[in-house]
Length: 266
Image (cartoon, rainbow, N blue to C red):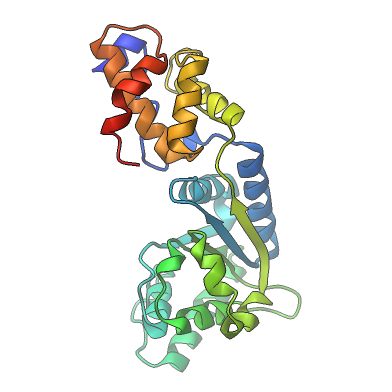
């Protein structure tokens, strides 16, 4: 309803991880460049950040940039046992009947991964919300995936994403063997005040609108409420657009943000 009022082609602050709306702050741009390096080297990467900082969107953007030489397999619910993790990985790699015994299962995965290599394709296993992993054996199996290799190269890449507590989990001495295999350990920081303004204008323009819809005092309030977290910024901005539309306001100022801040659950 507010799209026509503001001249948008689409909603500028949707919560879905659409790479089209990926705002590359210096931190996000560096993370993406490093992830591309991990794919080229077929290594393990760990990417952490607060809820809503853009980790999932980055992984989708990475997939879009990578082309036909990579096959992405997303594990979005990692509450699995070690064996369940391997069976899930096997199914994502199109193993028709994943074995129930670990040795046979690893052999099946190795066969498919090698066949992919012969076709010029590198599988990329992406594990999201990895801080939810309850079975330590899953981390052992992640490490073992890097054993699929030739003399001069690995045959697949692994990206492990999660909230900041994942870093504390992996700091345990229990996971020293895995840490030695990790080529990239990157933490996404929230946006700064200046980046928050750039983010708002970027998404407005991507949606077909004009920059400057949010006055500087409104941006300051949004930054304070959202703490620079993109998903929270989206929530505040969407509510502000609705109020501005209802008030027939062409500019969103701090008074509108004050009007909605008590309704936001942050």
